[in-house]
Length: 317
Image (cartoon, rainbow, N blue to C red):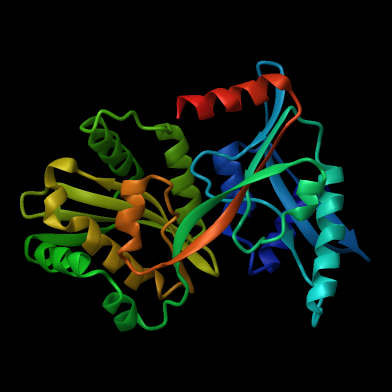
């Protein structure tokens, strides 16, 4: 079997594998031929994996994040009852082997899952990292407690919205995409992903019972906002939010979050807001009571062009 065939079987039995690392997600967001996976095995058993999206652009070999994908990075199966010291030694061995197995590249850029807290072996191999943040509700078992932790402003928005809009599920892929495109256009923003990409993602998630759309509509049929949420066995992810700026004051955004948290509590354990480094968005997300959670963007450039490009981006900021 190829590594990808082995990995597909591995993911079917490994319940802790995040959705972003599952083959059906990677097929949809990367293209079947544009991703591969590093596997480490001992005695015929897979003990670690790391999928990666690989592209050739302008003659450069690039490993980067697929669009609409929050995190990838290494996945490690730890032996039972390891001491902390032995765990770190095990991680060093595994991560060093993964680095060695990476294909040659000019640019590497991946966001690691927040469960992967040790990037030190990458540092020793001249990689760099920057810390990013998301907000996570760690336990969905007590909805009343979750709602009570919402900021007062969010509770007020929810009460307002409940009087004027209804919540509906399963907006079609085309309708969701066009709504997002339209609401962004009203703000002078171009949508960052194609209809074809979204349809592939939508279909793969619906086919694997791991994604759903939810939307808020008034009595005249106007959509005030919509969410596309995905999930795996451990967490749901608020992947895409579309809010019409002309109806922003209806409170629909807050009600949508409340309703979708209630739904995903029946299928998984956590809720990840998928964060944002934008100050205004962070301020809003924070008010839903999630815990600020760090994850690492790990990168390395083996070509002077990419080093200059990154420096210029920092200067422009």
